[in-house]
Length: 75
Ligand code: SF4
Ligand code: SF4
Image (cartoon, rainbow, N blue to C red; front, top):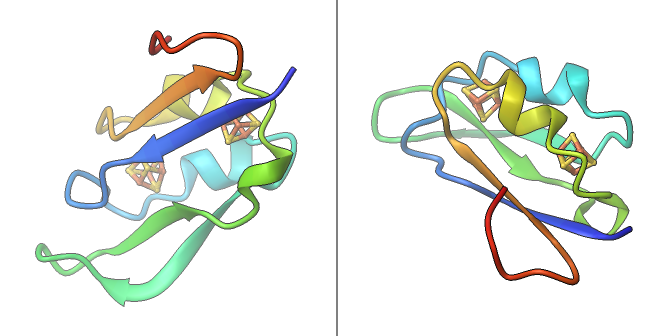
């Protein structure tokens, strides 16, 4: 199953919970600040995403949306 994520970089506080929890190592942290002064998460290897949604469940700032490839509906 393929998946896709979208990260709201302005909500992100750079806690890296999503980076740690992703079993596929999809998410990285940009060495750039968002407008609040945090390094932010981004999909570094988007092709490896399975759509498991572990990252979205782990994010304390509700910054991540996940889609399955065969559905346009966010999980
Ligand atoms: S949905 Fe799963 S595989 Fe995709 S980025 Fe999130 S934790 Fe990683
Ligand atoms: S878990 Fe959420 S707040 Fe933390 S780095 Fe990932 S997207 Fe940003």
